[in-house]
Amino acid sequence: LPSQATFDPTLHLESNFCRNPFGILRSPWCYTTDPETVWELCDIPSCTEECMHCRGEDYKGKISVTENGFTCQCWDSQIPHNHGFVPTVFPEKFLEENYCRNPNADSRPWCYTSSPSRRWDYCSIPRCTSEPPSIMPELSCITGNGESYRGTIAVTTSGKKCQRWASQTPHRHDYTPESYPCR
Image (cartoon, rainbow, N blue to C red; front, top):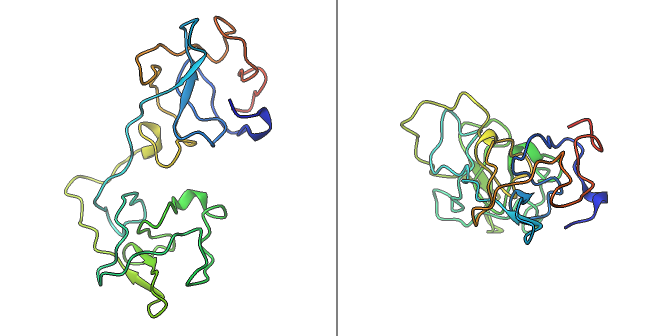
């Protein structure tokens, strides 16, 4: 497991729910109740939806080509276009990979393009036919590596039941609610 130094102090380690307190694993995980398996990744559904509500500010899909056919530039890159929408500065905007997003409340999702001749362009994201979500999507699904996941799945990808974070049986660990009370 990753070192305790990278632990996210805002994580809720309640019950035995899957979490990604370190933010560097690819998915939420848990200690298992199986004495032979210390920990394992959990299978949490992705929040990705290939449509948008309203202006698409909550769009978290994987479309990465603009309506004019330009491939989107990665948000964490400054080439070919310098910009201020850096994922580490705006983690709540879900600026992942080179996916179309609407980080500035524009009329719809867009991206910086990988073409030096076109700085940015809108993306063609279809409108959702469902009602806009009334709860924060991260409560039941994940984006990215699942750092914000706060759902109630408590079983790993292979079907092993998760050990309670407060428990030291069958596996001893330091990531307890008592050790990190501000979760």
